[in-house]
Image 1 (cartoon, rainbow, N blue to C red):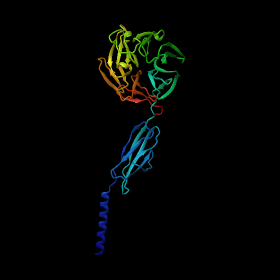
Image 2 (image 1 turned 90 degrees about the horizontal axis):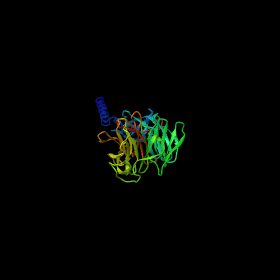
Image 3 (image 1 turned 135 degrees about the vertical axis):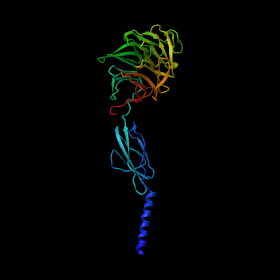
Image 4 (image 1 turned 180 degrees about the vertical axis):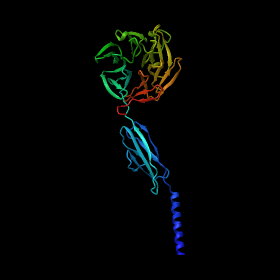
Length: 364
């Protein structure tokens, strides 16, 4: 009788133990909330798991240690593996969750950039209003000072020569690095444009000048010299322009003016010198002709680049580009876009399908 009673007690104990196990199962595999790609050197991650009361984690290691459900560590540039495990009330552990995060190199930053240009070899030139022309290798993210100047804004490159505006002057850099003054103006000079025949166009506050063959003298080409709005459909030299920020030359030789203060882009016919509006855009800045032969416009207020097709229809091409300013295409059709009016501006690389990413320092 005593033996039967002992067997019964043992059965009850086993049954109770199995019920406890059923009530407190292994915690669920943790869910990790946090970036998989980040610019931050100390990204933040959060963990949660059904049935877990605490967590164990390890960064780039298999040795798990206790950690909080909010986790952050300083990380170097590159790929990192974060392993997380949940622990239940009974000490049972969940399966390990592995979360991969890639830390990118910081974006290149520029001090109040003006115009951006692409040299024939594919390197970029950026005129920094703080006082230098910066040369960037976009493939590696390396940056160097091409030359120290006063107050550059415009820059344009062609085989064997670089033109840039420096306060109220236009200067050139030859293949040996020698800088010479091409022309002097009565007011500060803004963006530049270069035609296929070598003619250089120079923008001031209310007038565009042309330097035939890139040489002085500078002849008035468009704009009356008095800021304002008017003159569409008439002679370009009688038209009023206000606060322009972009110039480009179309394949047919027409000059395109980003008339920022008047919220439109205007075209000067190369044969008749008649000026006409071709696009209405809020605060247009940079303009460029793409590899498809159509016009691209930076809208600084709407943080995007617009595409204007042959019929005049305007559509977004790249969005989310903060204060989109100057534009330049390379030979492969990649678009480069500067951010404007900031001491820590980025340059965006935009692919042919409109996807954008900032240029980064070497090591990304």
